[in-house]
Length: 168
Image (cartoon, rainbow, N blue to C red):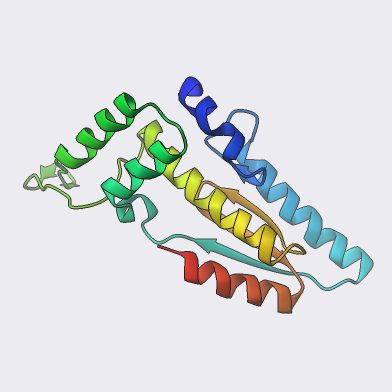
């Protein structure tokens, strides 16, 4: 995984945590807590909005995910093998000791599959770069797809509106 992530590490946004070496998930929470604590001490108002993609890994289109990886320089042989896995996999629902009938999903990437982290990280990175351009005063953090944005009420609402347009 570290060899593969090295292919795209340079395009990942610096406010991403989780799934990356040297970017511990707790750092995102500490940064947010520190900013909120500083607002209490200084009396400067700050608003934080926490966002989570609904069923992110289940929402990715197979072909879109593969094209995203190829566009960011991952080796075609690896991407095509992964795409074949996604397209041809069968899912089985387990409830207690019982197994359901195998189903062939029309979309979704494998949760727990290290390769599936890459499209998620690239999507959030792209969204954060959009925020950097349109809302430079917003601070942000993300643990894979669990995102937060912080700033004034007006800035956070405007950034939320732009993020909401971007969500899949």
